[in-house]
Length: 183
Image 1 (tube, rainbow, N blue to C red):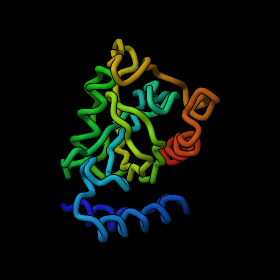
Image 2 (spheres, helix red, strand yellow):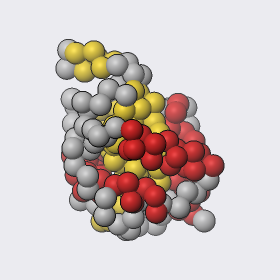
Image 3 (cartoon, helix red, strand yellow):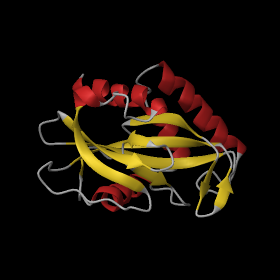
């Protein structure tokens, strides 16, 4: 199913998702290159809310650019199958082979990216149109991380999903993900 169709069929969980869904659809209707970093206004990213078997912990990665903890994810880089992107990013960023709990989008949001330097080149501020999928992994398996992208990876209890070490903009998203899962 095409990305636009998936977004149109997605049922927003709250007002933030309703507004961001509208923004995503307008973005898709306005630009042709929504899946690549060539679009300097924004592009789609895919992430994963990885929970443990008991559904009381989540995986977070310390992101170098954001300088804080956030769920794993990455750029679509031209790939329309965002679920595959999320699964691949989890494995690359955590070492986990996570199980997909649902093939459908679990959450959506527009995420701000501040201007920054990456690999010696300046990247202008832009928006990530982020699609999140629900995955599960064994929290007893040792975690791994890539030093070029992060400073660490860990499991945290849901109660810590919005503490001060999380990226500022992601705290409400983490709370939403936990609330949606535990409803």
